[in-house]
Image 1: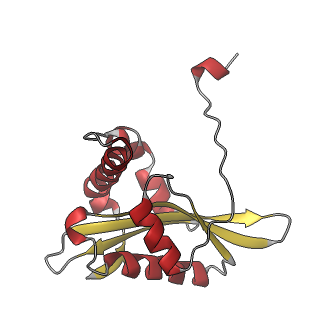
Image 2 (image 1 turned 120 degrees about the vertical axis):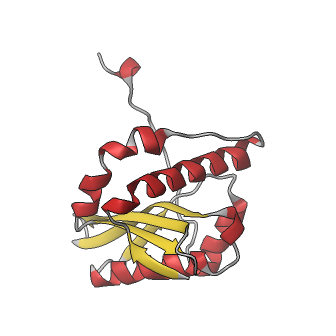
Amino acid sequence: MTVRKANSKDKKEVLSLLDEFRADCITQISGEQGYSDSAITKGVKIYEQLLQRDDYCILLAENSENQLVGIITGYLCPMLRSGELRAEVEEFFIKKNSRGSGAAKLLMDSFFSWCQLNKVTKVNLESDNDLSRAHGFYKKYGFETTAQRFVKKLGESEKK
């Protein structure tokens, strides 16, 4: 198992992996077969831009056959009040057939190495309330539940 930074050639596979992640979350939350094409239809527009940014990280886990089995993405967020730098994990997913293989720990370790290189003092990660298996991993890795998250979606009905 190896971890590497994503590149332009990975675009289709990365976006498909992110849609697989979203579909898996929908299935776990609803109990019904999930589907997503949001990464392939919307993420495709910004993929190349994100690869060029120093404050954004896309790391991929590959098995011995060079197949993608996992992904972690995140970004840096300066905190004005403290003058420190926080990192946010945006996406974190391991394919079903690779769970328990050590890929999750390897990806998270690699993300934390990127954070250390960038002098990050805190890493935030959010997860849907119903993803208990993932929560077990996060707690085992050292994350703590410390806050509630509030979301207000902005859309066409909001624009007046």
